[in-house]
Image (cartoon, rainbow, N blue to C red):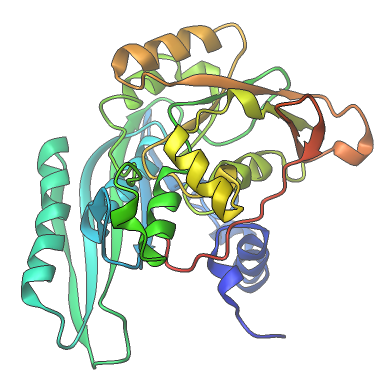
Length: 344
């Protein structure tokens, strides 16, 4: 066995290979989920425990973003939104959160107060309860600033959304991609003040995306907020191991001009950068246009169909994602997250 590297935490293929090798493979199959629900057997945004015709969605995530305060938000805001959105992507209404906060000895209490205020403000705005958590302090030098783990709990009716794309599905994104990753990259490079229009898209999707998911749940076959690894990682996960291909049209993927220009200068593909306020959906073709229209009415004004799921034209493209370029060429879209540690 080798050493764990930064790339193992980037949310791409290396991350999932490590998880499957060191964790999933060690857990007996009958202990990968609660009977009737979903868990390690699907490795979705969260897990599901069933109670009759209702289900409890549970999602947990750790946030280590650096800097802890960045254009468009801070680690507290990000943690609350991230936990909420993971539950939303399962088709559940977020009802409660728990948190675990670990801070470095000597952290400025004013900064900690700002972070916790941001966390609580998101919950207040969404009507989500904070029902408990944990707080610890580590000796100086053993943790950098602050780490927050948030666990979201949500309740849904009927069947949850468990990612399983089908031939013909249209790929819909609810808004511009790469925003959060671009903001963190600019901040880490010390360029944030020079790029005031580049800001994180960190926001909860409860009020805009969840109503649409609930209205079309039977016709939405996959839902994910493309955080670490960005849209490219999400789409590749959806077809990994399946005899399917996803084809996207790069010209249709919404990217704000300021973000595109900055990332072009950095040589970074926005499809590989984290989003923190965007949903990616795989939708039956007969309702895809309706879903886009409803998302726009709800406030996601740049919701767009960017591609579709197809039968692989050749066995070489089975389980792969193909991007049609702006000039009509076709290239494989690989899950290659930017080597940008502590992006979320």
